[in-house]
Amino acid sequence: MNMKTSTMKAWVIDQPGRIDALQCLDVPRPVPGPGELLVKVSAAALNFSDLLMVEGRYQVRPPPPFAAGQEIAGRVVQAPAGSTLQPGDRICSKVEWGGFADYALVRETMAIRVPDTLDDAAAATLPVVWPTAWIALHDRAHLQPGETVLVHAAAGGLGLACLQLVRAAGARSIALVGSRKKFDAARAAGADEVVSMEDAWSDIVREHGGADVVVDSVGGDATLQSLRCIARNGRLLLVGFSGGQIPQIPANKLLLKNLSALGVYWSHDWSLPQVERSVAALLDLHARASIRVAPGRTYPFGELPLALRDLAGRGTTGKSVLLASGDAS
Ligand SMILES: NC(=O)c1ccc[n+]([C@@H]2O[C@H](COP(=O)([O-])OP(=O)(O)OC[C@H]3O[C@@H](n4cnc5c(N)ncnc54)[C@H](OP(=O)(O)O)[C@@H]3O)[C@@H](O)[C@H]2O)c1
Image (cartoon, rainbow, N blue to C red; front, side, top):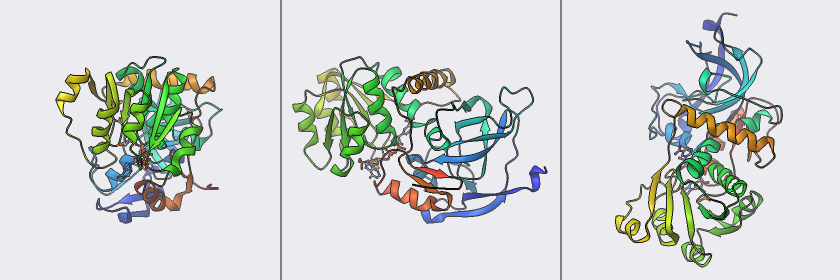
């Protein structure tokens, strides 16, 4: 096979801007460099940061033109000499970009072997939000059984993973969602209480005794409201700013309640052992059926712009997944 002349379909951004700037094009199939796998993509999951990358507002800024997409599942087509992975092996992985394509390059050290108990659409949802949820709750907040965790955007990809991990840790969750339409999704993931941003939610959380830990992925006013209902000695986990505003945290609130504000970020470049530990713990929980790793909605490959618009418009629950071909639900 002549890799250099083979082509594939990919969702390409020529000029970062609006979702409409994405084009489905025939482009050269990528050629793996040292330490890289070539993977035939079966399913690619969406992340909130895809929206930021498409708009050129994410911290990772690939040189355009580039294919979007940061999380895939598929089969190894080509592996480096001496690799523990072979052509035909099923893997899933975070990729820096290039996931919304027929083929993607995967760093060998980032590839996760997919157990037979996960199909490709489910496997594609594993590499990003699940380690984030694990690292946030366990490595950063040191969550203890019996504690109460307030989870922002609790019916989203990260949110549903957090709800399940809170339950698996023997802790209690309060799910905060944008609208009542998302109550059922949060409850199905094990939320003990569900509150809507449409209501005076920080008062309601206080009535429930406050939160020992807050997983804050929305930012802006949601962060400030969270400081009203976080309990003494609480841990505020700053995970993202999907609401679009980076909050200014008043330090006096941290002082008066003995609070910790903790950033949550990880990378295969500087925290590989931590990522590997979290993935091992998650696969163990999956094997024991303590968590359910699954997509929210699947979309056919051609519907990436619709899938991204649904995510931007707060219309999704769980992780959306783009399928290489075949059925979408
Ligand atoms: N730090 C890390 O390492 C890391 C890793 C992965 C993800 N993240 C962050 O975690 C967050 C969740 O990521 P995700 O991929 O799982 O996305 P998601 O939660 O599935 O989707 C974003 C959610 O944010 C809420 N939201 C609130 N205000 C919004 C607005 N103005 N526009 C759009 N959405 C808004 C919506 O939920 P409601 O309608 O229920 O409010 C929406 O469903 C993001 O902030 C992301 O950047 C951080």
